Amino acid sequence: MRWVNRNMRRNDRLVAGAIPILILVIGYLIMAAQRHAANPSDKILPLPGAMIQGMAALVAQRDPLSGTFLFWTDTLASLERLGMGLGIATIMALLVGLVLGVLPPVRATFGPLVTGIAVIPPIALLPILFIALGLGETAKVALIVVGIAPVMIRDITDHVAALPREQIIKAQTLGASSWQIMIRVALPQAMPRLLQAVRLALGPAWVFLISAEAIASDTGLGYRIFLVRRYLSMDVIIPYVAWIALLAIVMDVALDQASKRLFPWAHGASH
Image 1 (cartoon, rainbow, N blue to C red):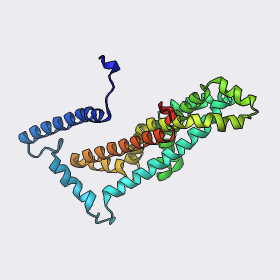
Image 2 (cartoon, rainbow, N blue to C red):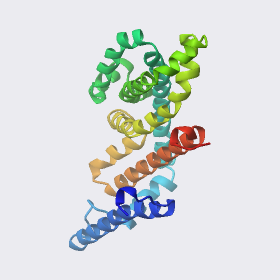
Image 3 (cartoon, one colour):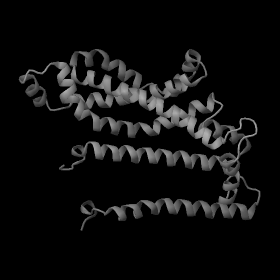
Image 4 (tube, rainbow, N blue to C red):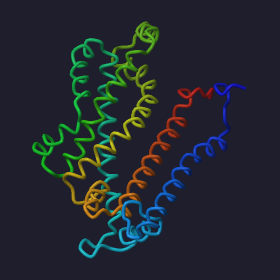
């Protein structure tokens, strides 16, 4: 059987997916052991024991100054900012995308503006956001929204605009107005695409969040990473990066499962 025709069972896919990760972990451990054999005080590639020791104070011990568990405080702060940014961007993508996708005159008028905003590097706008909105939470959330909302809007707009024209004509034949077409025809078919757009926006959203926290923040995962880098504290940086990756994977899987449960027809399910 050719590989292009070979489908794998779920358990086989899990095993196959775990192999590259296991290889990376083993490769890291080998390189770290070699560096520590040559230099026991090496800080670039810490061993697992050093990571556990470095994270213990952040995870399980209260900070003497703030009285909080810094690791969990950082996680909660970052997730709150990310959640707000993703939520606002998702609502904007749905509302604006539906209007632009269903109404050609509106798309012709505002489509170029959305495209122009989407191609601007969001990081370049960070100084402007901090000057206009201050150094508080608003600027950090705004960076996430500005970074991902225009791309999501374009995706939803293109998807809605590409719906079969026959569906629009049939709805109009039954007396549907533009508003009814938007709600009853376009909206149900845009929802699975919206969840997919959110999944694709997760990576950029984390990038913008970490960038904002690194520049102006006193808490958050990005803040902690850039705070300890001046001490070459890789025993903290690597676990923090791994934790961010794990959070992103969990969010991606949750969105994927939600899409399959809520809209099975969009994933090829018969019922």
